[in-house]
Image 1 (cartoon, rainbow, N blue to C red):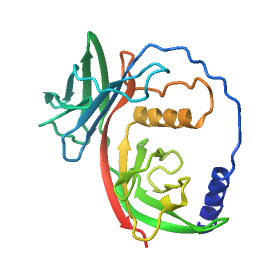
Image 2: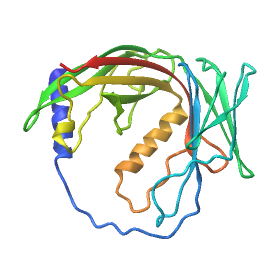
Image 3: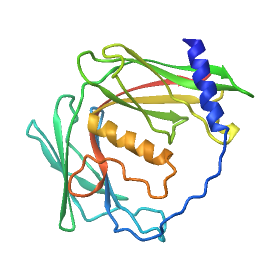
Length: 265
C-alpha cells in the first residue's frame, strides 16, 4: 500500500513541477450576465445559506457583486418552509429550518421576474474513521500529505466531497470521490496539498481539518465538471453542469457532514 502511495505521489509531484507553454486565442466577445446560485443545507447547526451573484462581461472587474433583491425560499418534504433573510454580500440564510438526512429539500429563488428552482435529497452521513498525515520523500524535501479513511454505506451509489482546511483556511482544490469500485468498503483518499511556495507546504504544528460531505449524484457531477473546466486549457471552457433549473449557474446541495482534525507532527 505504501509503495503504491509513493508512486502516486511522486507522479503527481512530477506533473506539478513540469511546465509547458501554449498559445491560446481568447474570444473577448461579451456574454450576457447570468445569475450564480450556491445553496447549501446540511445536517449541522444552521443557519443554512444561499448566495446569489451575477457574472460580468470579460472587460469588467472579476469581483462578483451580491444580489440583494431576490426572494429565496427553502422547503422540505416534511412540510417545513422558510423565506430566507438577507444577510449581506448576496447571502440569504435560514433561521429555523433544520437539515435532516433522508429529507428532500426544494430551493426556489425569484429574481427580477425570473424563477430558479432545484431539489436535493440529503443522504445519510458516512462514518469518518480517520484523518492522518503521510510523509513522502520526493525529488527534494519530504512532502506531507493528508489522508482520510471512511466507511461506505453498502447497497447504495454514494458520492462524496472533501473540504480541506489548513490552519482554518480552506484549500482551493476540489476533492471528490465515489464508491463505484468499492461499494460498502473502506474508502481511502489522499488530499494532495501543493502550493507554488514551499513555505505553504504542510509542516509540523499545522492544524488540518477535513470535512467529509455525503452528496447527491447531481452535486458530484457539478464539482466533477467544475474541476474539468478548471484543468482544461480551452479558450472558451464549458460551464459546469448545474442542478438548478431556469438558466442560473451554480448548484444546490443538501448534504450530511462529518469532520475530523489532526495536528501535523
